[in-house]
Image (cartoon, rainbow, N blue to C red; front, top):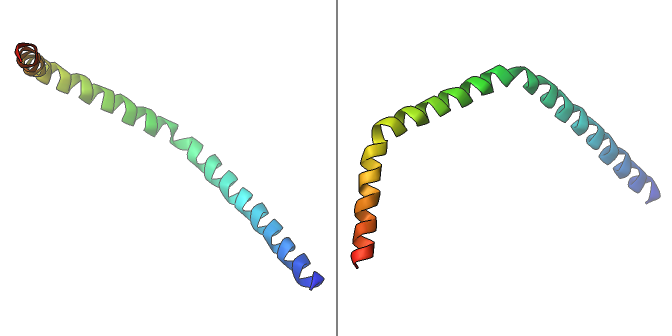
Length: 73
């Protein structure tokens, strides 16, 4: 029975060791994509500014109309 416990502990230790190696490889390989994430972030910010420029006045009108209805209620 003690032999089986020892083997189970050995395999769990090895599994943890190999999982740590896999995580480390993933983190190291993911570092090279920083310019891609920066580009995605800048493009998203640009789209938000563009949409806000066109939809801002309309959204302001909808908000003011809604507030007027609430106040007059």
